[in-house]
Amino acid sequence: MRLLHTMLRVGDLKRSVKFYTEVLGMKLLRETDRPEQKYSLAFVGYDMEDKASVIELTYNYGVDKYELGTAFGHLAIEVPDAKSACEAVRAHGGAVTREVGPVKGGTTVIAFIEDPDGYKIEFIERKISMP
Image (cartoon, rainbow, N blue to C red; front, side):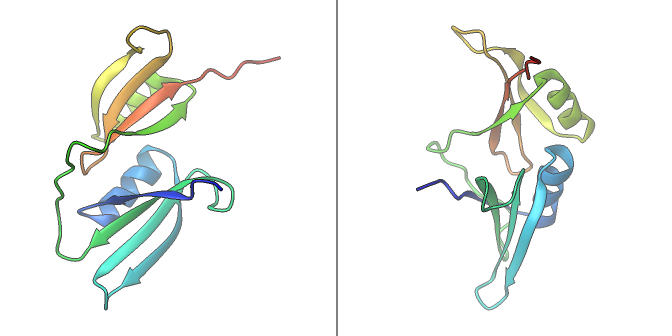
């Protein structure tokens, strides 16, 4: 077994695809429009679906905003430099909601941002060590 994707409902599919591809550097893997069922999908990720977990962005016709509730926590993305990643988000008009710094009680460097629909995304810094 393996995790295939996480589905997020979004209020504007084009805006969300732009954020995940241009700001977070993911690739648009595929899109599907289902007018009879009144929804559209876009799959984004850092690799192909047969190799890695991806995000399914779902737009339901006529719904431009969702209540996120209290059950969902966040997505996590590994980055080589959390400070640079946050600067890139800011440069594209995105929101950094927790500045770069060590996790409470630890040394791992993290930061939090929000996507255009308010979903929280954690950046976890992992330096690539050279042999």
